[in-house]
Length: 198
Image (cartoon, rainbow, N blue to C red; front, side, top):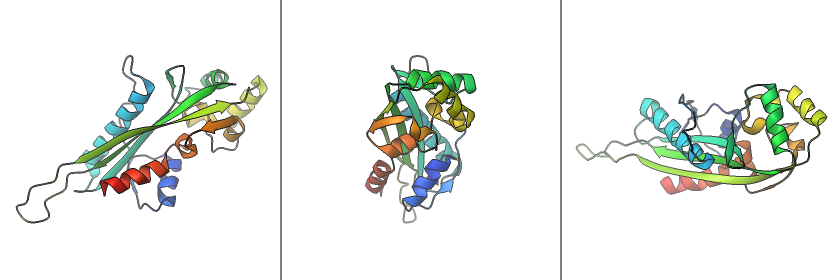
């Protein structure tokens, strides 16, 4: 199986679940389309990543997994912060409120060659789904936000926090849904979908 992601968290979750993955990151344009809802965005990006990697690197019949995770509040997607000022603004916006973390997942099995000479090729199959988790933050003081941003942890994470990080876990009052979805991959759901494709 190919994992079309270089996220250390996704790699670890897949390997812990027993998958032997080849890591081949996708290089695609992740710019949202005008008016595109956040949950549609993650599904489109996951599918685009899987298709790009499958076209370039997949062996016949090989499974490709791609995912994209966003934080959404008030119907707006929060991507990775541009800088520390942006990270502080995102964390202030999330402070004391409930937001959604959505992961779009695409499992794509590359077209396979026929099992016998002259038999037709089986077409590619694709399974795309989204898992959403509600996350509620504590009320955060400016000093608390500044201290967290200073750790550097928010820099490469959607919504400027990582729930699995040393500082990020101290921001969260509670979650409703899949914890690992907030980490970046709803691994239990992924395993079930992989079984259906096999």
